[in-house]
Image (cartoon, rainbow, N blue to C red; front, side, top):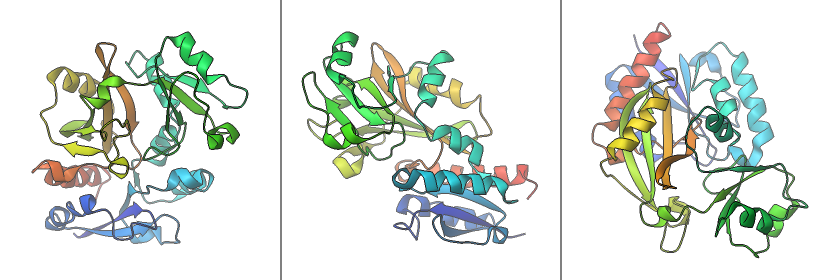
Length: 286
């Protein structure tokens, strides 16, 4: 029986990302057809056996509309992967503080409910940090993320914002060791990449001059990440981002909404992704 999936995407990516397109031939061989579904446009859910969140990379710019849309997805009869409940819980970076309370190592993070009337320099000094990074609780691709030294003035757009922020130490190792992204399908490790910022930069996204390379993941990091991922086989996909800080691997992001999966950096990754999708559809009795 042929199955049809809707891959949820953004208006600026109506044909999906080049990376996501790598899986389409493998799904076709399994009898699974994929159609792009733009999240801001009306569509017919019943047309699909399941919907898969993939490249809604603009959601942080219209977060209230996106949350409303996720609530709508909870009401439809068609399964959505990852589930809307998982995505809603992953929207706000406060999830890192919750993981820390559960005993997981994260990049140290201080919650700021607003930057107004906050002496950021004083907080940085009290923590003993030489530099810090401030980022919105809801963000993507480094949006409004700033590196700060004591004495620097907070950018005007952050001073005026009423949104919450996380304040974290600047992780110096990111400039030499980079950030590791480990990709899991159904709780099983698939592949990993290492991402470096541009010279003297700190954001590893390609839009900011970052670069990505395929390297063997350090065994200690693989064990640590797998302990977390294997507790949640209900996650169709998960990308766990880690950096080396204070002599340990620290989680910097847990991406469960629409992570770049870096399929092009591992020969078998697209095939594994297709088989994971097929396995989840079987769990849903398709």
